[in-house]
Image (cartoon, rainbow, N blue to C red; front, side, top):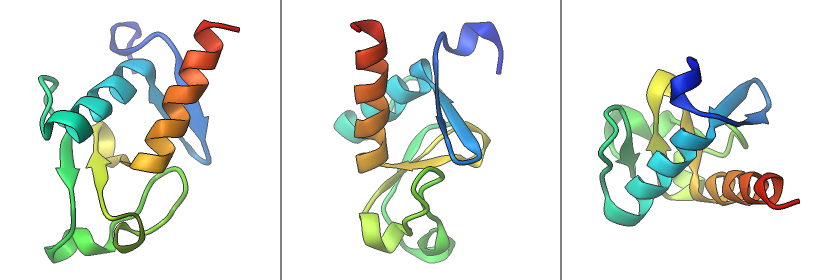
Length: 93
């Protein structure tokens, strides 16, 4: 990941997401799409049914929806909320 892709990282078990990607994923959740290429909402069906959140490992069928980001990383709404909270806390200690 280059410097221009994000300023801060939130690390999970074997995966990390930058602040810019968190913002793009939130945009997908709220608006259904985002301006950044490579992000989309996954809500089941077909081979996607076997996907899971890259952070908490909960399967798609359990979390309902995932945002698929760059590099094949998937994040559920609960983990996205947690990433947002961590980034907010770091910005305003």
